[in-house]
Image (cartoon, rainbow, N blue to C red; front, top):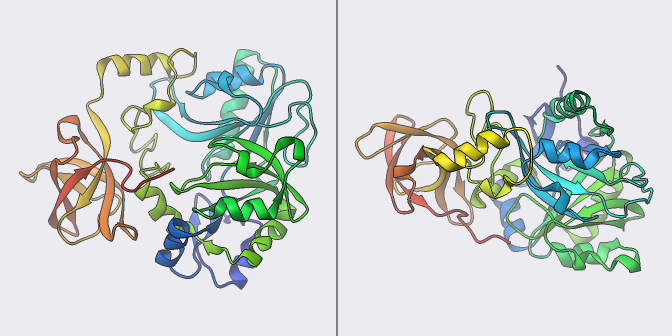
Amino acid sequence: MPLQMPPLRGIHDEHGAKFTEFGGWDMPVEFDSIRTEHEAVREDVGRFDVSHMGQIHVTGPDATTLMQRLTSNDVTELSPGGAQYAAITDEDGHIVDDTVVYRLPGDGAETSVGPATGEHPTYLFVPNAGTDEAMHERWIDHRNEWGLEATVDNQTDEYAMVAIQGPNAESILDDAAAVDPADGSVTDLGRFEATYATVAGVECLTARTGYTGEDGFELVVPWGDAETVWSTFDEYDVQSCGLGARDTLRIEAGYLLSGQDFDLESNPRTPFEAGIGFTVDLETEFVGRDALAEAREAGVEERLVGFQLIDRGVPRHGYDITNTDDRVIGTVTSGTMSPTLEKSIGLGYVPVEYADTGTTLRVVVRGRSKKARVEALPFVDTV
């Protein structure tokens, strides 16, 4: 099956990007170097093409009910322009996907970024790369099963997403973006808030969200206008960044990667095991709620921890984690050499008796047992 191409594929190629397959997409993994790009985001600002992320709009009289029943957080808490991180779980409480849910700003207004909202709230939720079709089908199937009145549109191929991340993201975007005076400016946005802003004449849904652990914004842009928006940041000398730096940044921040830190088929995990129990509101009714209520009552047997290698080596996905007696007790789900800390770090699931900060573990790196220590997450300070 041919890879999907982001709208910026050509411009990335012109600028010498190296590419990789990710979630069925042909995406830039590196422009200059992972370290250069990583440091730009930690110390200044960087831009990412994240158009491989899904874009699914839900509206109609029962849109709120549908979103509430299929995500683990409390959607009714969202005002127009609000957003929240949530898990999508199956009947057993295992994570199918994780997502950010936006209630689009300006209910009742028609915009170029998303459908007209009419008198009902419109939601945008962003599933991970390659899962948009499955999530679209899931929403449609449950809508029909429950007899709800809601329109569910998979618009992944209609919108690009550009992330501007780093301590200087706010000042640069404030200069580049125009917002209706009645709505203030992008600097008025709090974390997990969104508004409509115009960048280089293009209306963008602009949210103060990101996947790096730094302050920053994600811009949802009509597909055909992606190059215009991306290129406007050339004049600010914003570093282009690929998925390689995105991965090192998110591991330092302790953020999960679907398909690695949880996978419904190969590594099924509940939000409590994965360290995102804060996304679960048991006062709401959603698929998997009863199983998760039981899981919270019983407690978990394993949970995701961060660790640092004390001995030389780099942990990678799939490496064994052992105790000090060399008995296998878990598996590395994510690992890297941290450019910020200049130390090897990783994530993995271990029994709770090995999960306390400071616990000594060992990681088998290329057949050799390396000493490691459990560290508190995140590894670096985050916003």
